Length: 448
Image 1 (cartoon, rainbow, N blue to C red):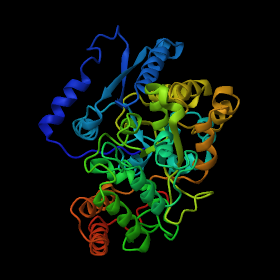
Image 2 (image 1 turned 90 degrees about the vertical axis):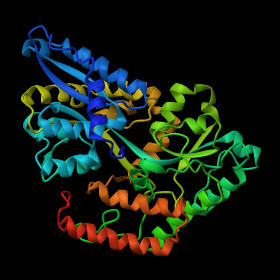
Image 3 (image 1 turned 45 degrees about the vertical axis):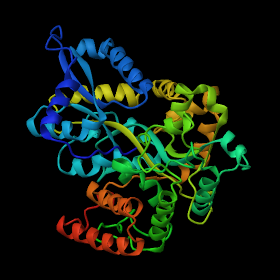
Image 4 (image 1 turned 135 degrees about the vertical axis):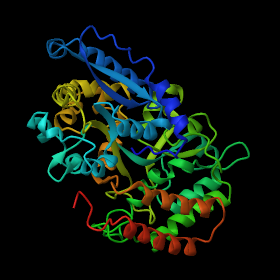
């Protein structure tokens, strides 16, 4: 999953960096060499707990003690992540291992920000990757990030009791965009919105889930395959913008988001009847709102024509670990990443159990271990995503963030300012192609 943030002042970044780095343990390591890893503060406390426990476990292994080093984990606030990391990379204080989403690694690896993991990890780690995950992480024959997990979005979640209240079948969700609007109208009340639609700073990456559905496009999301031209002034995008505009103009969704897209809180607390989210949403419900689990329904994200079976309905993101291009201890970094993410499949089975089977395997051996795990094999949501979404999900785009930001900004002028759809998309397409030309992006797709 892509998590992006708006720019904030450098002074604020440095202050947040100081807070984030507090508690690193100072300089007393009992003579051991610290190998630092940075990770965002994911919303799910279970993720942070699992990672910290595993770091502690690794530091007690023979590999760490005999190598006379230890892994030092720091969590950096999500809203300061991008600026904090860039500042550290600029002044030479970057961590040796960084937890990143897949989409942001490809172009940065070309620029030398990260080392090829193939030089520091066993070949078996990479042959064990699922084919579609390997395609996401192989850049010109090298891997610059090792997968931790994958997670698809968007998925439509809803409250069954709200459906029953207005005469809708609680076991059947909307299949098309038009149906999603109609359901939202029926579910809308004075004290409850029909649906929570994504907006604000996260809209750029959230929209990838919808863009992935565009079957008429023969390109790479908004661009053609060699990144030489943008195509957004099309019927697909006109209908997508119009659907969003309807949701906002009829006040079927909050004008200002009630929470981050990463959180399912508004649905869980009854402020909305439907909500778009990622696979992680079910884990939050299981861990934070177990009493309402039986009242939660879910379907694949509705499509433009209502055909969903065997179709791409979601983008697929995920997170992994990368070694900094200037890391002083790359062998130790590779040893830790292999132990944690590329070794015993039970490490990741444990993680996915802790997260309520809302994260999904990136490795064949982990997938096999989950299939043999009775709890995972009998989990309805895990099976729903594995059967109906993941086989068709499309990996997040890796082109520069500015492309997605401009698209999101254009949509917000339609939803928040009431701008006309056709003229907005025509102007956006021209703007994107000017950006492509200015950035000399033609032929720079690292996955081509």
